[in-house]
Length: 93
Image (cartoon, rainbow, N blue to C red; front, side, top):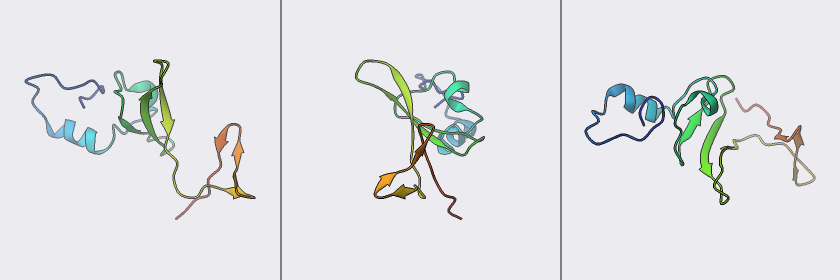
């Protein structure tokens, strides 16, 4: 992707910086807001909270970001624990 998330155009020179942006999943502070043109399928890495998000377009045509779950999800009685509509995780170090 280019530095703002938009698709490359014909004739674009694929620079090292572009490759690193792709490799690092456009890592930046709050990429859901700060990346100007996120594309469906992009994985965005938030440098503030270390969360990873997947950009999708829903069946109704609206776009959203889905937070990717990671290891350490808390379950009680086989139910995932949520607080304020967020899944609760434990730190795995």
